[in-house]
Figure (cartoon, rainbow, N blue to C red):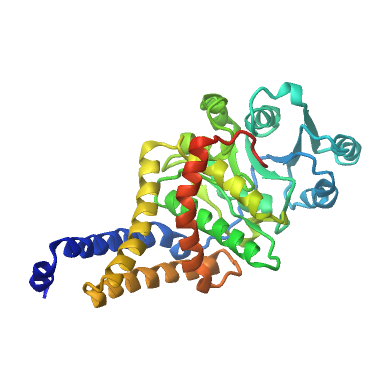
Length: 380
């Protein structure tokens, strides 16, 4: 049969072989990287805390967010922590609120960053000030649009620190709301988490999410903070620092439900698209091996769809082409289904192929948009 197909059309036979190869590559990503999250044992151990924690919250014109959410951080069941709120270029009444609350909450530390003091775009300067201001070695980061899903949030995140751990990657999700856009944004957020959790568990940490992650102040100082990225990165400071400082020995993942951060920020499509542009722009500053692994995954996924459609349209070995695509799709749905369960998300796997297909077509748009118009202002 193989010889018959080869004799029919050598070029189409080559496409069929290419399809089988890229499907195998995708299966490797599914079961060597992305399956690690749902196959890993969920260890919800919370040892007696031995260290204080500096919780760092970024805020920019988020007065009402702070009024609603900041009290929840002081309800954390952890014996020793401070809350540093970075008030970055706010034009509302945030500073007055923080000063008033600091009289009531002795472990609240407001830090005002005025526009004249921020020499570089994005969070680089505020992050550096926050870490240098921190009283404790463990710095736990989030922002004012988020609330901890449990009073055990600090304890859960800190429980992953041991003698060799210097970075802990957590999970943050968006509050469920009506509409297809919210479902799509939560799917994309899940997909990003599968990436950074999966690669970190495979001993190749490359990224994280700034709404919920922690690292040691000593690690930040050891790597000279964000100096190398001050001018080159408009956003994605969290990504690039983890990419620079993270390694197979010092990075841990925390995906227990009590460690989650929930954002009630209702993103419009334009907001989401700008965020994707910033994250895409920061990815070019990743280490070469990480860029290669991510590019290979995206490119082979695109080829699976493209080659399958081409071979079926030309009706060349349709059963083999359809079978190869079915193996890929079933494998992907199994991985997504189990990771959706692991991260307690409420997303139907029915939407996975459609959302993945849309993101694949969007990728070249992001590349071209950033090529001709570099994103400058970070949205956070």
